[in-house]
Length: 285
Image 1 (cartoon, helix red, strand yellow):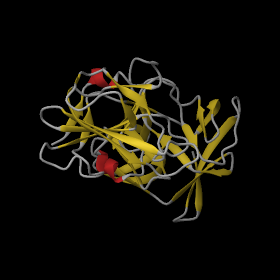
Image 2 (cartoon, rainbow, N blue to C red):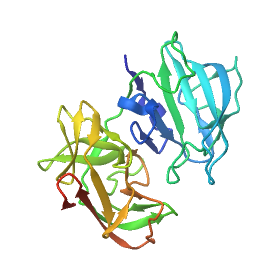
Image 3 (cartoon, rainbow, N blue to C red):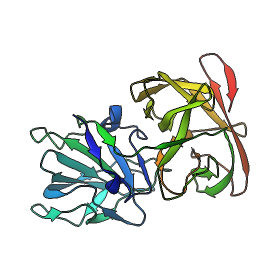
């Protein structure tokens, strides 16, 4: 059984991703990360708060020492949420959109990952404290594929990431889009996940294709909506970077390049290329 996130819930957030994570909880799209604007977390679920728990996070200089778990009984399932310092207590009832608390930048985050709510669902009789074993998650929005040729100008930059102005969102704020899985020149769903810095990714709305293709170059193999990346190296203007963060966005869209050594400024023009380690050749996007 999959749990489907309604459209009105998703539209509380400017971005979501099912696969852009290295953790087991996201295997096969069994959790979703929801990215709200601001420092507070609007609830994606309605129900009774069952428990809140503070857990120690991996030590990182840029992150908080502790993270938090919030469990909510939604009736059919138990919702499991992380990365929010709870402003709710067990026994309270929350509605969709209610303030759950302040977002926490925990040590589970890579340095280029923005604050977000991690959401997964369990059967009522399953252990809700385990990190893995949640139900598959689906979304009730059609994500529009937008093609990308691997080039763009830096529109926004941080210490460990840059966002390009391409591919451009065709309707900012009005719909979710993702970078297209371009198979033989036709868009077959959108790619999701960290390419290739996380072991796998996702293909949303792929209509049964087994190919994961970025601008005409095969980058992995799809099994349903789950993708195993090929052995790849990503370069930006010839310099190796960690990779490309792929997600579904409603605002501020454009290819996001990530890496602790990334060094571009707003206005720089960038061309991304991919080296395929298996064959030793370079595939230009």
